[in-house]
Length: 373
Ligand SMILES: Cc1cc2nc3c(=O)[nH]c(=O)nc-3n(C[C@H](O)[C@H](O)[C@H](O)COP(=O)(O)O)c2cc1C
Image (cartoon, rainbow, N blue to C red; front, side, top):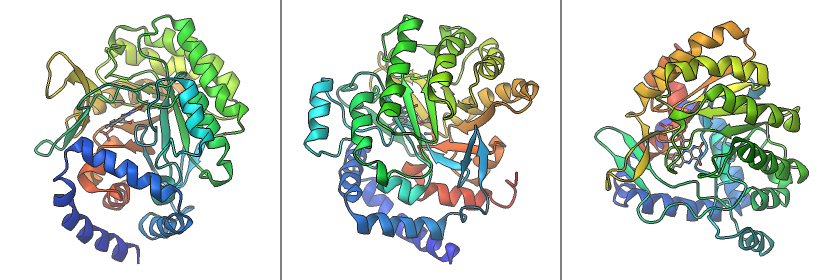
């Protein structure tokens, strides 16, 4: 039965993909968000998606992945950046939209029903409109994406308030990704913002299975390569670990950091109580349209960079007696790339573009025979 549903999905996706690709990446993304916003409100759609999930993904309990202090129902998590919501100019505007009943986080209900574990966010302390103009690109030849969305989101307070009002319908296993505001250079202020963001969720009774601290956003003008990664982790993470306890804290790091930065991370994570490292976020590069603008590379083009970071981290994680796990992210598009990562859990985003909404089910199936942990 699972194979039958997945085979049917493949036929449908192959037929629909050319139509989908008639839209520019940005338009396609915006349309998907409008659709998700509608679907979130429908009990029928949610139960239909749950049924599809059950027939296409390995049964929960069959192959759970214990990672970063969380028991995942499956090994692949939808990465941050899909369920992060609308941008607002001010917190007041965002809160007004919540009170008015608007869906400010399209996909919050329908995507977990269809895909299993999803990481919401990134949410920053204050709302952000993100970057103007074209912010999303896809390159079919290299199966890569570029984005410079620029952390558009409604802000942590409004997101927490929105989720609080829907807490009964929140998924069983999901995560929240919080990020510092671009341009905030002072480490102590960055830490305060992260703590305030996490506190909004906790105070609202919204407790995900994990919180991720995103210390790696490439398309906002902040360059993570110059930072002292160990100091960053210690300053930002230790207080977050205390605050969120017992909910585990994960961090998300950038690709192409110096070997010294990766070397220092596992130890800093272990001593701060961080339970997992997601490697990696997108790679900052010149955007396809404007060499003066930075955009984040994802998909197959990111894969070798992400793998290099994962290999460096894996070597240094061995000394930490398993207290910190590695979660692969970057260019996981099929069974082969997933197997190559050799981690218990992974995150994906660009696979949605090339392989459609059930990309993770296809990847897990393709990787299933050899990727036995
Ligand atoms: C449109 C878009 C928006 C994203 N937004 C975020 C974000 O807000 N926070 C974050 O941590 N990562 C964000 N990401 C990065 C993804 O979570 C992921 O790390 C990256 O795309 C690499 O995985 P992939 O090669 O499977 O795409 C975003 C990616 C894309 C394509």
